Length: 77
Image (spheres, rainbow, N blue to C red):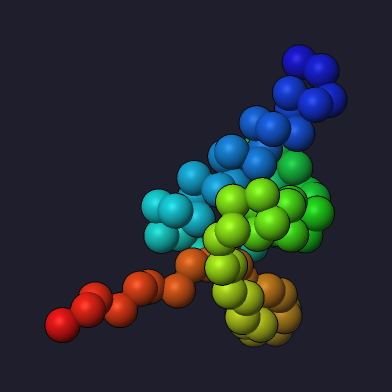
């Protein structure tokens, strides 16, 4: 697979995980997609698809890292 096709595949896989409601991290994307470059793809997904991706600092097991996720949309009454 050439670099552009791999790039587009990574963008698609990361976007699909977000749209599925998952909270993703650099580590989770490294395991599931095979790239350590989540921080590179987040702004691309935000711009290309106009998706509001939220971030939150988390501390677990003495390690601090960011989780990326989509906020749940409030339903109109």
